[in-house]
Length: 205
Image (cartoon, rainbow, N blue to C red; front, side, top):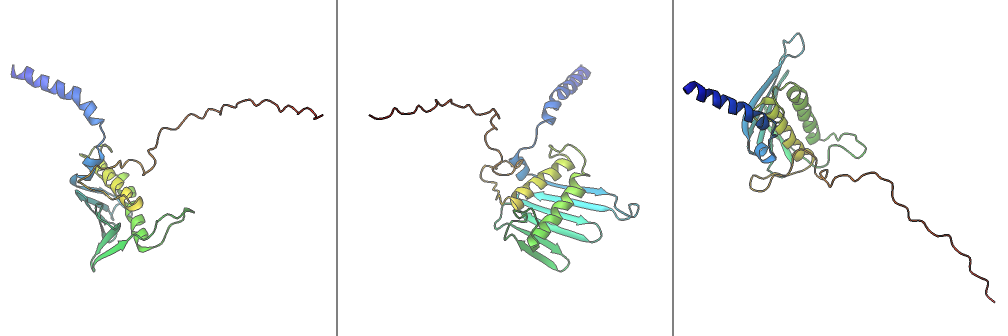
């Protein structure tokens, strides 16, 4: 009898798990998530210089530690204004505050201290995190999902100037602000209303 009950539990878990696994984490779950994940992969010189990326997140506070040749650490609070990045080093902590957009209208990059730190940090998350992290991207229980959640929050805060709060509704983080507009209309050609040709007036007597 106990064996049949155990088999029934396994069967129910198998039937339920596919639907649960396909559910993407919500913006609120991402913001309020508390986790620490470590991603490593072999670097140059036959792997003698490994790349190590550690993501630590506690609610709004994100800490990114990266080691390649020398260690570097960025700290970002996505619920705090003004938009800024704290950069930790052996000599202390520097603050890089955003003063203008990092990508100019002509698509060139701004070279301010903030933008330099922003591009360096995003490159690390993409190249050493999103590419090498294991697991399902849409689940906060996997390194890939945690990296993806962190990346989205940082992009919305640092690039799109979106200030988050745990005490209000959390806006969507899966698209840039202003892109979730009404569905695009069909590209059917406009209906042309025929216009009757003008009739010349009769000459006045």
